[in-house]
Length: 538
Image 1 (cartoon, rainbow, N blue to C red):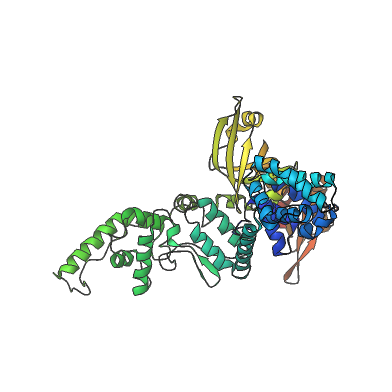
Image 2: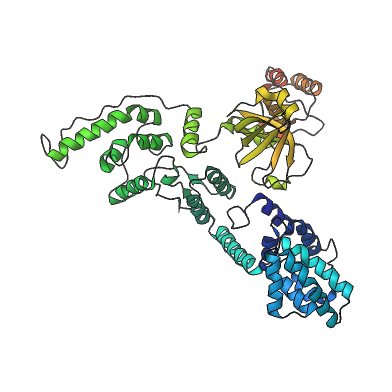
């Protein structure tokens, strides 16, 4: 329910998963209950809905008012109905009670108890039953919510959920535009788009609009999502492009837009985020030549506008710009620039080096940490994007941080003992491999670190298969040597043989009894055998 009005928090997502609402009425109730006071009644609501607990009404006569909320008093309107049914209150008198509860007026609530009980007795109810029902209503003053408000919220939530379901790309693009100044939201929403299989194209001067848009089922990153690019500059870039043709290259961009609208700082942001990729020069080359190119265009425009020396319309004869060549930035440098200027990685992720380990060993659901099991040990792999050491009220050291994975960010907590043991492993921007538990009781679940793992150990654990490509010609003795090595180095790694046969290769998976350890030493021994053409782990 990410991006769904009133229902996108981690806590609410957890409640929705448990409650499995099937109607607007249930959405209204959950929206009203998910507040500090009535939060404690949600388990009762869910258990009664699924029949795990019997529905208990304060009095049988109240079933018609409380049936839809499974016996739980949720709304202020229900308080009014109870007062009318039990104590015979008029609508106006019941509203006085509702307002007293809504404004937590203890004096009014105390004064109302006697007439409530007297009215109930007159209607044939027992005084003790009336007292018990009134006592049930009193705590409601701490959390009572207006159903009409909850209904409006739920309807809007349903509408946004409908849009997300049927126009997913467009809906997410609109939300990205709306949250353009919130890096955490942008990261979360882009991860959400990818989880739906929607590709998000990088910003570019020839394809991006001012805001985030959709084209051919892909989200196109909006120019205003780039740090340092204001709405006026973004609009000028788009308007100038639409007046003519796509920009041919960097110089064409400068000449058509003018160097006054797009200053050097903004140009630097555009270059570093890849907005000129594919237009003839790499990012390092563009940055290296940027100031010289701006001066060149300024001079060219000045001379051409005067009409001196050259044709005023074509500036024919103006000397060409001479580019100073340079190798492109490294992959890590490109990612760093994107992080600095977009707020997150776009072309890739520092985790890519450990992608196989991440996919096979990371057990934390970054997108839905609230679904984690209490007390269970998890493995968390990601980039340490935020880290600081602090002291508790008792003066003990501890650390707080954030670890970023492919699907989102997880908050981590490191207490004194683990901090003393692993302090040198917590390096900002480094990839960390952590073991610990997840506290789901908080609004934002956090990961309590118990151990820092070695990547080499995890890498070995992530290996599941050993592929052995056999040579076209081999004898039984050679195969016995291979079997001997495998039997000596037993482990959890399955073995797949690639056997040449009649100009093609047949894959044969060994039975479970034949498995080996996933060590480089074993791999080296196997590759050294004449019967083996190639061998590799996967």
